[in-house]
Image (tube, rainbow, N blue to C red):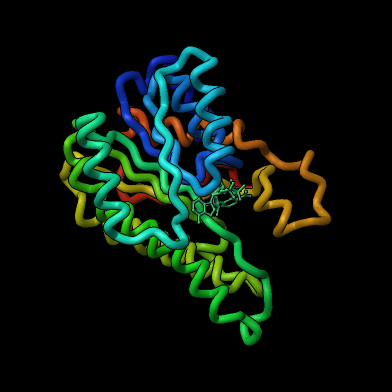
Length: 248
Ligand code: NDP
């Protein structure tokens, strides 16, 4: 996947929403999509970070993005329905949805998992993504080829000691993608997962504080797969969970 080379205008005229667009992988994906011609909707909880990405995109001469400040921890189904209405009014459709934002929660032995923290991780990583995907499907169906990309993890495929709620939420993400993709087969809409692999971001540094970040891939290194799944080169790809990095 890392070999995929997108044309400079691969995403021209596409409207793509990125969650968690203010930092880490989501920030880089938003900048990369804009650089390839997309109008990007920047969704996240820290408006100042979204504004910085907005300014960077405008300064680059790429299509003007839009900002949607939303905390997925407290957002309701109505918030996502309202978002769908706004997107249809302003853009007429949504071509791509990158469900990237997640929280790590605490890494802890199973019998010490705090139930409030468990619920919070599930709320952001699973329920909010479900509500967003569900509510935005009508506007995604207005696109010629719509792409929903979920974000998984290695611990969403093989459980790992102490990764508790985060790992459970990523198994749920894989299951959500597979269930949805099976329903979408043969339609104009497709759903897939990306497993970014170990990547130099704040989340990774929180999970592995002793690790040297210089040894890790950067978000930029992952972008071939992020571009591929949003471009029309992947219209036939549905129900796949793909690795952005070769197995280490
Ligand atoms: P970061 O923690 O660096 O960035 C996460 C982004 O999500 C931030 O912009 C953050 O906003 C946003 N976010 C968090 N909570 C909410 C919320 N409640 N509402 C709205 N936005 C929110 O994570 P990464 O970039 O590392 O991770 C991106 C994705 O990749 C995640 O799904 C993660 O699970 C996955 N992943 C990452 C790996 C890695 O090694 N980095 C490995 C495997 C998977 P704010 O900046 O305001 O905090």
